[in-house]
Length: 227
Image (cartoon, rainbow, N blue to C red; front, side, top):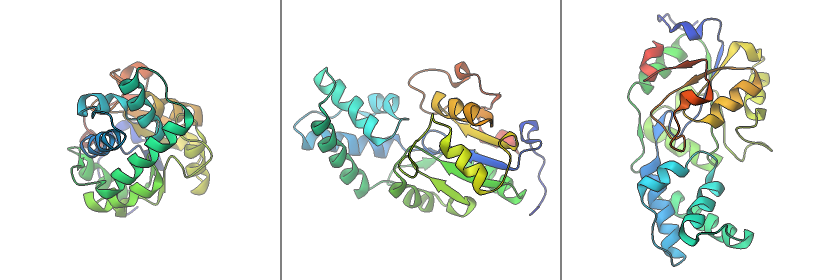
């Protein structure tokens, strides 16, 4: 152990904690909105606005743009048009992925305490892997994570349990000694399927649904409650 902190009871016996990124550790919707709207304008459509984008986040960047195009056109886009829109989004988001992205209150303190306690911390997000490091560096939390997995890092992404099981195997930790922390039903479903304990936060992006509806083992209002 690197040090001692009093911890929330849900952490008893937990050796590895997996975190979602968007909506759990950081509020990235302002930057995502800029990129979505710019991509839509590039394609001759009006921007969607932050209110809509906030409800579309959670299943990766391709699904984000599919929802944006469905909203703009009223019908699902053909694969070629979706491919083009997704490429425009990636280019636009790559220009400034963390200009407006901020940590949620309590995140830094929780990560520091968990890291100090000697637990392995991993990041499992559906965001493309290329954007993870810039955001972690910009928010100053990159040093805490021993492994970062994006939505394109493995053949499947959340709610598939593969990324979580991969992380547990990587660090040789039994799944029952792992905790998945997230803001959406996809995080909770992935955690349950992997055999992880699950913890939900209610402030993120869950398509307008309370995260408690997904039945996590624990819900906390802020990650600061973990320490």
